[in-house]
Length: 478
Ligand SMILES: [Zn+2]
Image (cartoon, rainbow, N blue to C red; front, top):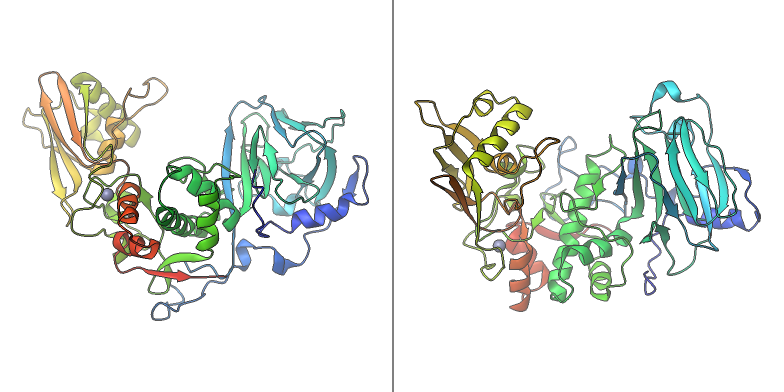
């Protein structure tokens, strides 16, 4: 719970709902209108395309790279993936008023099941007694408030829940976790049988402390926290700019950014306050602030790790020379061994999944050699030799890592997954040995290296300039 939190960046819908509850004392259906003053609500469609460009030449209007945010945006974070429809989640605490809003058909996500929607339904709001228990049943949602009231929202793919009364330092509780902002529950299909996602809609500056607290060791240096806040803000803004087709922008795992929800960690809160609105920019455009735990000494290029895309093909994401300063990180060097047959099984299964003919037909692996390195000496592709006169199979470094760790319904996850794709592979009899460096993709900021620089009195700006060469650290909004 963020008792210290005084930021006002919460969606104004809460204010609106607080007003509603002054006239409602029992569960009742309310004719709802859309939000209050549009200027108060960060809206995906209203964020200017072409904002602040004080760090270089004006960007071209048709530049596919993301624009700098002109004001604090709202981000959508998937915080729970429910795949068993009967799974019940509880929203709110005893004694709280919880507003349940059905947005109406016009706000349904693109992926809504059009056949189940009754055209023309407008938004409605019901105020319920917390905690509210919610699950799915065939045809819709099962909703039960603390006093036994069951509102009917049949056929709605999406429902929204928030605290009906705004109160400083109190956020919405979802199954024991507290989140700033409000949540949407989004069904995965029209039948109510496919499970649903819980998506936290939260103002960016209220989201960031929960990311920084989740991503770093609590005792790390304030400059590391500040650098992390800027990288995470830049990453979130970039993800948001090209995830419009989905019902969420980010998840709360390491695949995206770890997010704890509401946090009381003072250093995390302070890092967001100190860097409010500050992002990474290059040529007037936003730089996605990729980062990983430890680069292992040699940086990866974003294009090699994530694919050729104008977002990724910028100088600050090509890594820096010379070797990084993260040598004391626990996973700077690591070794993992696997039985040869297991490696072959996973490569073949990966080949089937990806329809890679050469991998699908693999019988044995005689060698896995580095095929190509980037300008910093980090492997970007590997050649898998099977012998018997066949040509080696060349795989990108991250693809090899995915293939060696491949798991599916019939193939359980390996006991130890590879920590990174920067490694040397030795085949010794029936054992395949991976001697690797670092933890994560190695693009952009290296968290362990950032901590080393911070302990060496470097500012958060200097840390960011080290990891994103040529970047401009700019305040995009106040
Ligand atoms: Zn590093």
